[in-house]
Length: 263
Image (cartoon, rainbow, N blue to C red; front, top):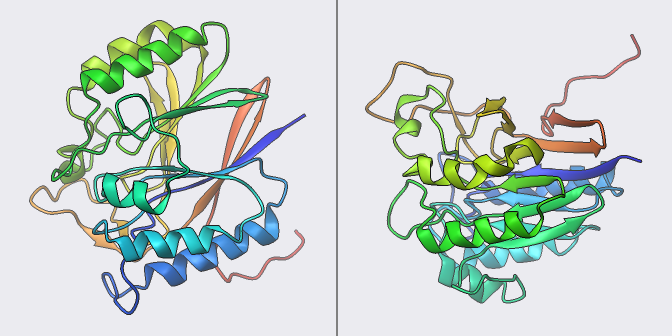
């Protein structure tokens, strides 16, 4: 039996009546959710890996709450560097927190444990997993010493070759690497956001993937180092299909109107 879920990232919602880089993030998210609700009613859950809003505005979290309410599956939300933990918690009081107040939790599934991490650090763009957050992760990994694991975070713990984005990835990644290393063989996949690009590969033997945002994108530019080059490439979400032998990630450009036909 195949277990299926949906990965969405970087919705960057803003208060109503405004635009972001000449785009309407709410309208694009609505198209994304409409497509998911139409195509993937069999998905076990949907996860959004951070940057839910662009400025952390309470009105933006209210928009997100209202948009997500019409989905037929549960939704799990992570925080990114553009988010406000207090405003998020006020809008989503039902979301579990760890013992230190971070938006971290574990979801038990038929294919293993999904561990959701909180790399938000107020007033900075890079990611942080402090000693308290890493201790929580270590405890949860040890608690599931025989089960497969899927990790979710906003920030990647490694560079990808996009110069400016690489300066705002996870700080002190070696500490994170030391925590996950003893469990690497059973970490089936690492999902993250932040980069606004379709990227996949492996890190220290752990497969990973991320994708384009539902809002604006980061251009494929390995040279520019003094700014983040943006683009209006199509937004996407991912359909993740898991069974005992494989993890398959399908990227879908939900606004692509290209005609389909039988080959």
